[in-house]
Length: 239
Image (spheres, rainbow, N blue to C red):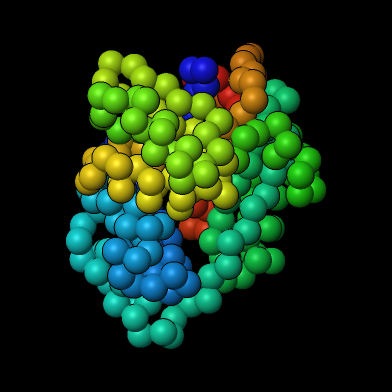
């Protein structure tokens, strides 16, 4: 119980450049989801979640609408998901998720972030086995037993459920995301999710100290500056 997770709060970006990058990432992710799963949020739960999260992060509606219209047109960029992982400064571990139209370019850019911070990019699976790939839902509700019952009836393999200060947190395998969300909405009605994501959660956290602190900050900064990078997960505490 009480496992930590990274809640994306990209709306905290203060400069126009940072906001533009956040908008671009949401636009790309919405476009890919709509193109692959359909442009109707009612039948595409991933798209629905993305749009809800984008609105909470204050992404302008014209950015969302543009991505949806682009997907409806059928043409446009052909993005593919790419995931890289390895060891960052101070023995930390990182998983980087990307959407790219040029895998060779993206790999080279990500590898450079590793090499320029005395880090080492790894092969697939080199560190991801030290993370849980989980669906996470956080929402206000007062009946934990009813939530658990609904999930069990939907054959969701709930790995953890917490109830703290009127907020329920549900952890389930990433493969059960759709089943879990559908069961929650069917039982609880329209929910305003604080968190509705699939994330990589480290089994244990580590502390980076000394000169490695600045290196780790540079490592994250270099990755977050890359247009193709959508999300960076790591096991560094308080970073």
